Amino acid sequence: MLNETARFMETLFKNVTDAILVVDGKGDVIGVNPAFERMSGWMAEEVLGKKSLCDLCRGMATCQEESSCIDCFASRLRMPSFQIHLHTKSGEDIAVAGSSTRLPEDGGLGALAVILRDNSEMQRAERERHQRQLTNYVIQAQEEERKRISRDLHDGIGQALYSIMVGLRVINQLDLNHDMRQHLDEVQQLTARTLEEVKSLSVELRPSALDDLGLAAALRSYSKRFEQTFGILTTFEIGGQRRRYDSAVETALYRIAQEAMTNAAKYADTDSITLRLADQPDGVEVCIEDHGVGFDPQHLKVQGTGLGLYGMRERVTLLGGTLTIEAAPGQGTKIHVVVPLDEKGGPRYVHPIADRG
Ligand SMILES: Nc1ncnc2c1ncn2[C@@H]1O[C@H](COP(=O)(O)OP(=O)(O)OP(=O)(O)O)[C@@H](O)[C@H]1O
Ligand SMILES: [Mg+2]
Image (tube, rainbow, N blue to C red; front, side, top):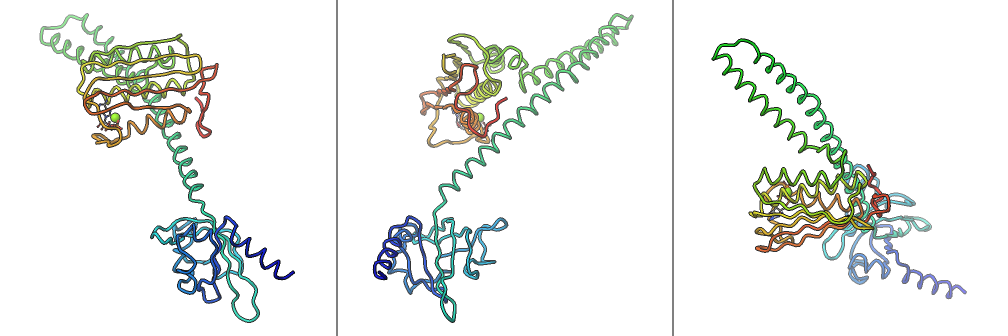
């Protein structure tokens, strides 16, 4: 019976998916199972009697510290949950979750059994989720701030400048000498120019057409402004029916088109761009295409801050859509975005952490 139990325990030790490491009272390794060998790369014969716990453990990860030996699990009788950095044979230190139990022994310190589970994939997923959540907050905060500044510029400074213009027009009716009138003309022109600049800055920050009239109208007027500003022939094509989408979808697609077209103006050395918006029964597509110098998306030579393409991808991912870049040196650039939508024009596969709106 005892033999049977021992055999069963041995089979269990060999077959469990969690790695098991056993060290004696002095901390020298006296047992490892095949799962430990797979996790660490160390074979039993390389560690048994040859390595100690501290050779394999590079410290515990705590809330305060990435790696620390303070309150080491080995000093405790039992520690149900902790995280250590396991020193693998390849030289890499990997984060693994562990639990430990000191096995009872008469007189002296008993052996310590440490059970380890590789949670690096879980941690990576958690880090990615956290990162995406932060990006989502930043994007939303930035959008809110742009809206606020745009409104302040339009309603505050814009209105004040308009009042100044009206005041100047009244002064213009008065009986003024030649010098004064010339001076007044200059001030009037300067005020008119400043008012135009404030208006275009306000539109650039957040076009009211995007909220009032929708994506198609906002993209149409953006492409007109773009053509005037950069002198690049801009064709705006629209396919499918015209309809409104969820505000998060409209904002994201507008910002993506804006960034892709700005990139084309900055880097493509092109004289024509096509912007396409296509409504489909189950989604919406936006495509920005230039026939300029192109680039290699696998080996980006970032010329600005390099956040543009990253931001585009993040916005699309948050809406459960896809972004494809077709570009090659000398062959132009095509940015293609597809967002699957539900019947109300909201994202069909919205990312769990993304708030709509
Ligand atoms: N249409 C394009 N034609 C040629 N090169 C491009 C085009 N779009 C992007 N690139 C290349 O890709 C790089 C990365 O673009 P991205 O928008 O991510 O960053 P950036 O424009 O350099 O900086 P940022 O957008 O943060 O101001 C650019 O620096 C440029 O080299
Ligand atoms: Mg850019």
